[in-house]
Length: 368
Ligand SMILES: *[C@@H]1O[C@H](CO)[C@@H](O)[C@H](O)[C@H]1NC(C)=O
Ligand SMILES: *[C@@H]1O[C@H](CO)[C@@H](O)[C@H](O)[C@H]1NC(C)=O
Ligand SMILES: *[C@@H]1O[C@H](CO)[C@@H](O)[C@H](O)[C@H]1NC(C)=O
Ligand SMILES: *[C@@H]1O[C@H](CO)[C@@H](O)[C@H](O)[C@H]1NC(C)=O
Ligand SMILES: *[C@@H]1O[C@H](CO)[C@@H](O)[C@H](O)[C@H]1NC(C)=O
Image (cartoon, rainbow, N blue to C red; front, top):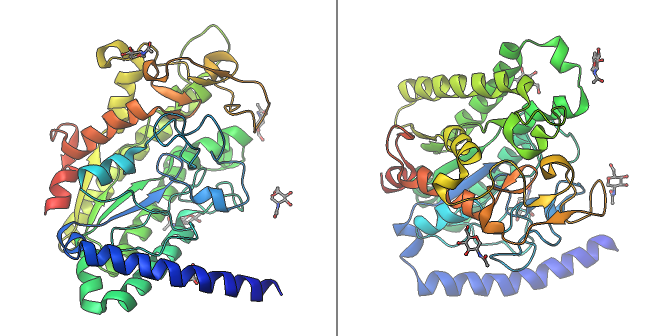
């Protein structure tokens, strides 16, 4: 009976969406041929609502998430737009649809597979997130659907012109600290970072094998300096949570080495590393230089630095503080920047100088 209902419902939905798709391609038949598509993978930094459709607490489908730009809680963990939204805008694409959105049948501009809380390792919040390996399975499904829709040659062309944007690893490093997991004691920093980078490498190679050429990996944030981590440091010390720093620092070195190596070995492979680590450090420590008033305390949350994940009152507790003017803050909730901070990160990713975003910036990747 459940199957029957689903079938009828899908059937009706498919018919109506099919006509929308034909219409939009008719109106702009050149659009997807002219603009490179954007495929997005990773965690809450880039999740635009996939987690709305899974059983997890890592979601943001409630107020005040989304209060500023969309005026509804879309599932983005911010008050408004996040980096992939700005990149899509700069690349003259519509907002990139999320894979799990039941209405999404338009794939030619790219798809967002990111899932808040997820990592490169399947163990990271297993069962409560879409891990990177599963995101890759979903992506392969999309490539099959594109082949059916456009034919093999045109699908291949779309996939090779597309940009593949990732935010992955942060949860692999922070989750063991949240749970005091034994991996912190059984693996050295080198071994653990090696596993994360090894899994990322394998995913890149599989995307390359189906035609992907242009990859963008913003550097890992200073994970210990977000309000959530800062709140773990004994009160009054006002410093970053230091034990996690060796992980994000080594990750950034190894990621850079990996991408250089892949560029040598894989024909046509190009990449970009926007330096989010450095820009976030700047925003946190010198907010006023960038027009913010507060870099260390979140707009929404509770406890020291508002570092307790209570924004919206649906997780650890119901009471929380919400600031009056979100534009003054670098962080919206204990672990995620505000739209204004994300916009600065996106601008740097798009058109940053080689010292910040290299060897290519995203503009150059999209135009190449
Ligand atoms: C969702 O996950 C929670 C915790 O793992 C579990 O107790 C609950 O039964 C799950 N709900 C559904 C609908 O699967
Ligand atoms: C692949 O896509 C089709 C069509 O959207 C869907 O019915 C199917 O469940 C998908 N498979 C996976 C593994 O996501
Ligand atoms: C974390 O686990 C280790 C080893 O299992 C133990 O020695 C340590 O006391 C634990 N720390 C906390 C804060 O629970
Ligand atoms: C991927 O991660 C798993 C742990 O989830 C690890 O056992 C495996 O060795 C990693 N793969 C590579 C290629 O590093
Ligand atoms: C909010 O803060 C921004 C940035 O400091 C400022 O430009 C704006 O005027 C403030 N808005 C209000 C209503 O105070």
